[in-house]
Image (tube, rainbow, N blue to C red; front, side, top):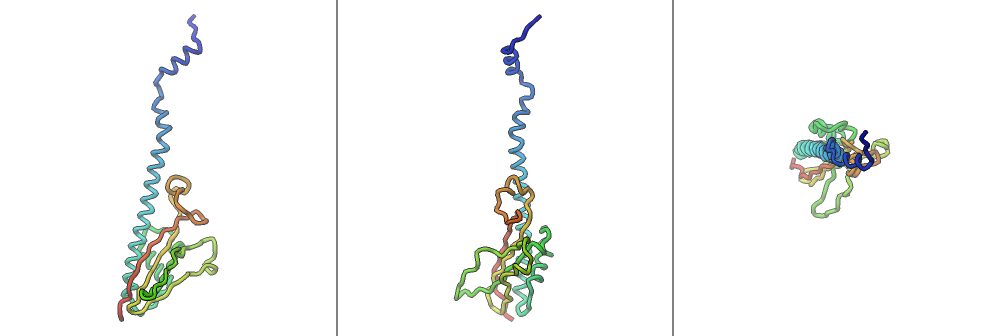
Length: 181
């Protein structure tokens, strides 16, 4: 009868190469998955941002040429939402600021955009500023929308700054001069 000692068993185990790829796979697969999901997250954020920028630019064209017309916050927001396309729940997750800026008596615009806070009612947190411009006035419009990240607890979604409800803020801004009447 042949006896195997513990030392022989360990030596045999060390030389055996079966399943060695499983160790590498277990180490590198989460890293590759993290890179893949971060790329998807970044692509979705970029797509939303591009759609928001384009919708805002098209809407600004209407505002610029519509001198003398009175637009409400909700009308402009709905117009942007119709053109944005890839923005989820746009009408409740977007807020606009439209401010008249005097280039000769400059005052800074608030650096923190006015964003939707869904934890409070709209009556408690009204729109900060929305002024219709007149002929030849310099106007600044800023749109802020919030959305849930694709992977909120992993990768890029976990690293991005979020509001109290775990939503990411996305901004688009434009400046224009009202056309003369």
